[in-house]
Length: 310
Image 1: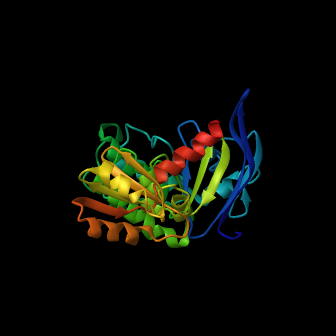
Image 2: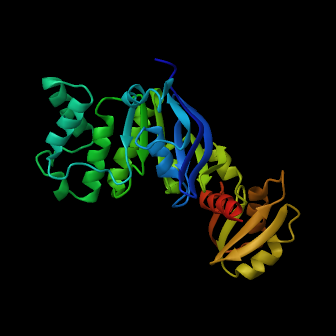
Image 3: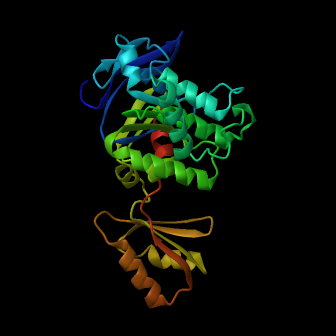
């Protein structure tokens, strides 16, 4: 087996005249948790299906630990745990029976299959529903069953399409904890449109739209692209008067008042927060909130994908 690595090589998928994925190339290595971002219809799920061998590319290929997903598909797929969009399963089967079935498909036999299923039930906190038919479960529980089957053979590569979709806040916390625990010696690719997921889980983020790669960066690098990066936001009485004063500061490039919040944008290389704090004290303004902005990922996402549309 080669090094732990995913290599996508000019992956394309066409449906007649529609280009769903357009010559997409990237590499992911061990220890990386890659957030695969894009608006609905961007080509995220199509890319996931091609990486896992569920969908044949129109051209190009991908290598999973050195195994070509087209020419050596079975060996490539043995390395992968995959949670598809919607977490499909056999609804009439109980949770335990389904996970034992998946374990046997993955090569476990007899007691080994039973033990693998029990381990997955424990890891995903499914011990309250093991004898329930999957079709009777809530959306959150069905999602956890989908994650359990993806993890059952302890794969080196995890490809998860919307892994926390349908989970309540407590369940999201548990699933994120599990993903973080596994991340050190695996490759994990998470397709999502939930920007909060990138903050919570990922050490790398890619944004695609219309099947093309637009940005490949760390989450911190993405946030630093935000025009809010190192801006200062205040919630204050008489914001118009305060804005007038702050706009005169040499360190302030621009001041905006929006939805009751006053945001001051810095000139490059200035330490705006300290200057604004000094002004607050000097003028004795009644400030209810004062914060330094790291940046806003949603604003970067909108900007990048808008530029692509334009």
